[in-house]
Length: 252
Image (cartoon, rainbow, N blue to C red; front, side, top):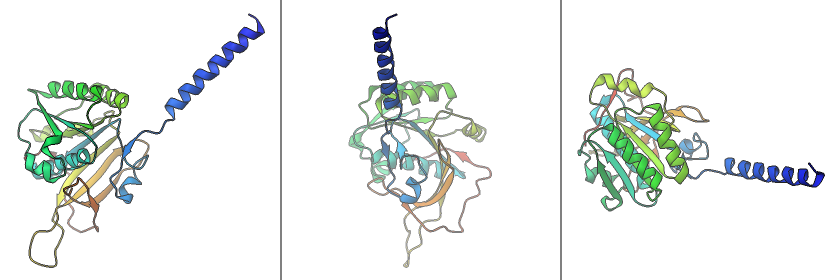
């Protein structure tokens, strides 16, 4: 092989390597919470858009499950564009979702008979690339299925949000199994924010960041999502739920 041809091959290989390195180091788009104490805990300063994120309720089950759904709705609300919401039970209360900033005009609902239908719909929605976010309600999220969702989200840059809900206490243990999700959250309801006068203050949640890739776990006391999908950090109180045994479901 001539010296000139060898040089061309080496130059070609260098160009390919540079191209691959450029693609791997490209900064992923993120959706920040707008709360520095939370965003600082997340690599990139927010939730990665082209990735999967899991949310579940803790503690008292039904009420906490509703908080988990609204937490996910608030995240989707702060994205730009239409949102695909996949579910098996048509019990999502649209007015509550709207109060969390996600207006009904932005939501496309897709109902299936079982988890497999939701997974298939989520993968199609993420692969389509025309949605700002894809939300799916699931009992279980197997590792293989989560990898498929993650790859589809990564390819299009669409955020995937999995709201885990259970019909039985025994199913909640599945939330401890590994998945390909970038973050995993658990949301529990706390007594509402106190007011200087009689009345009910802003709903308060305990948001636990149970897992984050390239980051550390943390927990935050936050004010529930407002009409624009935003949360706020609140002072730590003594009214913490007992999360030693919990289940995640959600009634709307």
